[in-house]
Amino acid sequence: MNLEPYIPSFALRKELPKNDVHADRVVVVQPDSSIDVDIMTVPITFAELYTSASDGDVTKVRKILDAKADPNASDRTGQRPLLVAAAEGHVDVCRTLGERGADVMATNSLGATALALAVTAGHARTVEALLRLGADVNCRDIWLDTPLTTACRRCHPLSLVELLVDSGADPSLKNRLV
Image (cartoon, rainbow, N blue to C red; front, side):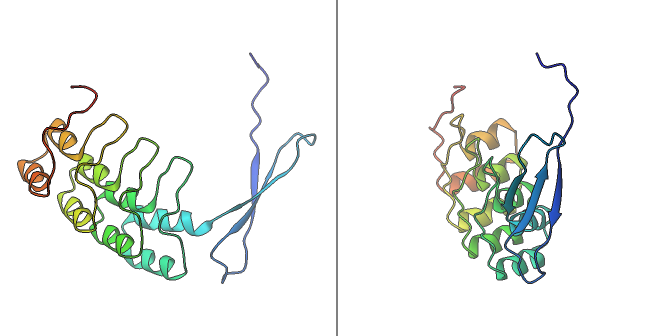
């Protein structure tokens, strides 16, 4: 067991010219000079797009996408702008991302799609928008939950359950708990 005190590294950010929205240079400098300096390129448009999607700022999302940001960019856990917008119930952002090429069937590390996250949070209008964009109503996460099993387990309003069933949800599908 290492009992030495933890000394965090710190990052120095050097921004590129304002017209270059695709990348930022980040230099991570370790306090111990025997450790090599780590230099990496981080897509700043992902962070901006993700934050704007999370905030529900559809105008900013459109501007970032107009600057050629990738609507399918993700972090190491598979989180994407569409997933966070769906989880937050931002219908217009979800529509915009879907119409601009975001994969409505992309999943995070737990296998959750945008539809699954919208259902989990009970955002019926977002669910409807994602279904219109082509989301699979019978998609499954790593526990084999479907949007319908999630809606029922979370005791969401009957109208949400009916929306899923009317859209083709299969009530015979079972998750790992059944």
